[in-house]
Length: 223
Image (cartoon, rainbow, N blue to C red; front, side, top):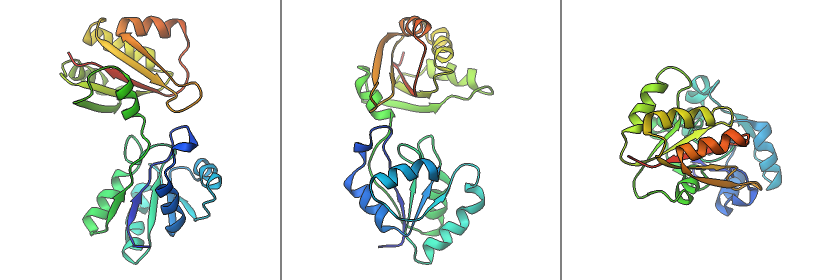
């Protein structure tokens, strides 16, 4: 197999979303870099993938990236996966891709699962042009980012945890106005997947009565 770095998306919930090509690549590379080897071990076992896996996450990527790039240059093929979705999208991946690019190491990204696109498409909001913001800062810079998003003409997409979704909706309603249209998708591809659409005010009312559970994608229309 050609020595390069393969970026391999993994399912965000439904194991059936793994592609045939992704399984093939993970079986053929010499090493899998996994955000959490315990989490990924369940997926690898499900598909009969016996390739060795090594931890690669935000706490060690600065220390080991250079050595990994050197190994690929020496002839090894590696694949990068995260716990769920496409590496680099609100997950580790940027550092090693940049290091490979600077060293002349080929990088190939397979298409696959990510939460933001399904949530955007089913939101019922304009999706021909959009802004992906990922997770908002918890403290420093949070207010200024929300104000900037409130002035955005394009539909924008956020990731949020169940613990902060109500707070985020309230802050967006204050900045954007309570009637701004939005949609919240949770547990995408999983058994309890659902999408709630309405104004920010209506979404606040919904989650004030119903305790938020699962991982959320919030889609908000531009002004």
